[in-house]
Image 1 (cartoon, chains in turn red, yellow):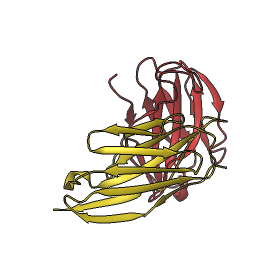
Image 2 (cartoon, chains in turn purple, cyan; image 1 turned 90 degrees about the vertical axis):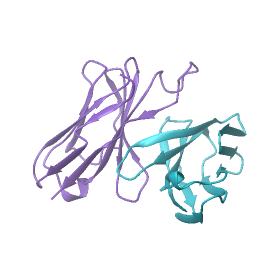
Image 3 (cartoon, chains in turn blue, purple; image 1 turned 180 degrees about the vertical axis):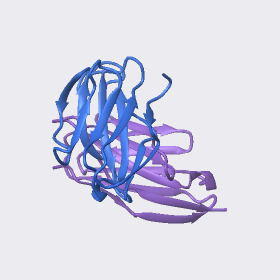
Image 4 (cartoon, chains in turn green, yellow; image 1 turned 60 degrees about the vertical axis):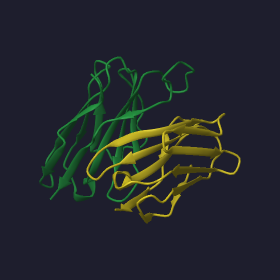
Length: 120
Length: 112
């Protein structure tokens, strides 16, 4: 696609519910990232995929957070048993090339519009 | 750990005035530095990207400089317009693990 697409744009969940957030990266982009942005703060890294491999999940706040990218394109971020502190905007970004590479597009991230999660 | 700080946190100027937004980072081992614009309730729009080997980048009324040794970047917006009102974020891509470290942003209001 022309850009990174995220859905849903807005999600309201009751505390304890499970939610799933979807990211469609730019077609052909190898690298995919999830970031969490709390109100009034800059985005914080959650996890990184290179194709279908999750190479870094060090930013996931707890084991209630799970991300997958089974076919190396679409990714889903799942949050189980949501808590109020999970309320944030979840941003997805993709990059054409492997991070650290020297090819065109390496290390240039394109962000989606984000999914705003509100946990009541 | 890379710490990125943006000063000021908020800025209000009359239309036509030039804007100067500051970004500082603690670890100079960066691959590049990127400036983003974020409108309320929206995602991030990339404005300028400066590779670590570069000193500045320009696009239209925007100019960004990078001084890696002192850990500073500055975004200049010339002849500001009300449409420039938004939050501007800088982010440094770390060389060791290729993670973006963001500042908290500067919220700009340009008064007509």
